[in-house]
Length: 352
Ligand code: FES
Ligand SMILES: [Fe+2]
Image (cartoon, rainbow, N blue to C red; front, side, top):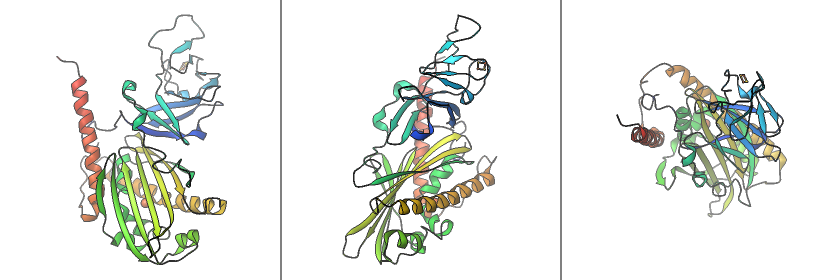
């Protein structure tokens, strides 16, 4: 699907943020679509999170409407039961259980407040490839991390990737909060690093207004270092430093944007953030949460509006300008990942 090739809809051999830890309980199952697959989550009595394919193999009932019975899931239609490995362990009307009667299990890793899922070949799932939570400051001492919002947007994931790597929109889509004129007017410097693509803007000597002035308790002027790192294909980490003219950093925050395809034209979008300032202030947490919720609504609405506009078009036209360089670099990285996936699928195809 555009902007990729036909059939290039999902990168499967990758980790994605599936859910917040708090969304998955042992009381009832929880369903979320990921990479075109229904996935059902629950916890066993020891609290271990489990993810199974969310379609009952018997008659296609959603296992999101099943019941949790100890460590098994019981389908809410005819009572077939499935264990944590996905094998059917009980069919009420017979003793024999066909081998094909399974709801395959996914590899799931719980880290910080996130459940990371691998929807591809389980033998290739390497937890070391999950971005380092300490490095992105979700677990590092001195930073205070907050689970913020969960969003489901009706737009393809790539539109959100290109929104997040296009900081020039801040001034126009979020003018009342994080988008000052200087953001769009400042040149972006793009660099490729091991595992991520970085866009950097240095804004000099800016007077703070509104949200930042209130949150930091000063109007400056300060220098601002605004970075966004794209860890393809699943995570963006926006970072901002506020620096006094003498060079001392007085505050930093980061926003982690987890982008998980749901279907070809819808996306799960989970946002967490972490800060170094006012770490004990519930008031600041509440203020930032409400500001971020408003900003994310603006992004979700923009992506959905673009999806509506291009929906059904094979090759929508675009006039790209210098400010799109970062997004287009991100698009090229994704194209390469799709090409690699297609090539390895060809390698695996049975020879005629
Ligand atoms: S559809 Fe699940 S048991 Fe029949
Ligand atoms: Fe935005």
